[in-house]
Length: 460
Image 1 (tube, rainbow, N blue to C red):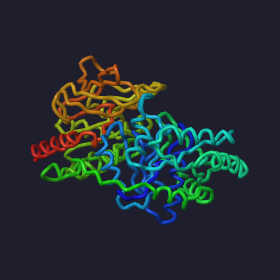
Image 2: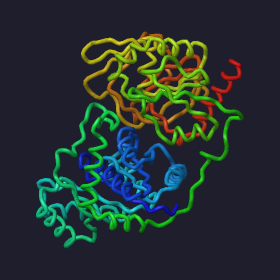
Image 3: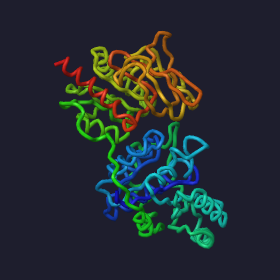
Image 4: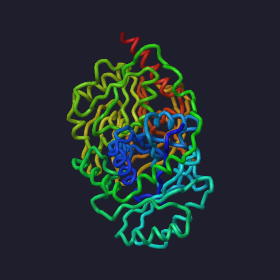
């Protein structure tokens, strides 16, 4: 891989790295450069901002879910055709899944891909101490190369000169610029994180304002020079994209609207490469599943926020239930699971009917119910493989399932020494809270499509 590349990482969450990555991508795009963005770890919301800023689908790189070779293969494939690749970190630079090592962190990606790091430091209420922060991060791990720093929330030009002088007189790290303190740059949040870009009517003007600030206050030419310092590494080819897996085309309907849009771009690409033709549809706006579909993929999202609209679309709910009873393969993750039960109950006690493929309801809580990486094991034969199939993924949800004692529970999830049983399965339907990256196990999408092919042939 020879594409210039850079990691943009923070000292902690909330430093403004998402805003800065967006601004850099938009400013470089305005220079007519092709920019490819990546997000560290299991995040679906930040990639939406980066996709809008760059004009190319943002992709996830996760060293907890992916081994080195497939991770670097996906990094290489995603970067093809771009003039620079920008990886946004998660939390702080060295923050991973545990305190023992940094696996899952931006630092681990920088090390694996030999990519220089630009640190984002929130300089609010800070002057010379900024140099101590930068020096500490730059010297913490010699295998991670912190080459530059961008300051956020700078109060004045004099404030910037103070932190710049402090850093450049005490470290070898290059100060690339800053963003000023500007309330107009703050991104609104809710329970799962930032409010997605596509829900903001003013996002185009916001992005234009942000790109202008970056162009005027960040030395983009110096940043590009740092990115070009990244050494080429060999193209890693694993077994993710060797050949189509199924002998004929399979139409897979993919739920894609305001309620459902949490998908790894690489998952969609892997399905396509294996022989799937992806057909987007809206459980909110369309009357029925696309008639040509032989399988259904319902990702996560915000069904709880759009529950009234989902409930109103009775014809879609009835069609989903009918297709499930007929044996159509359906893979549903998190928000998709919520849609397939009988109802969603809001924190205020309002109940909205859903598809009713499975008994019970989902109750939205006022606190986070589960977060983190999990190892799963199927408790029965499912469309992903036989009983005992092991899968790895992550969970992040505020809802909980309330169903009958004989509900067809599908998975046993393990996180450290804790285990839980969750998810539901019957016929060819599997719905759970677990978000799966197909790059972690090629047999998962293969089994999904093979099940769809058998159902397609049976239906024909």
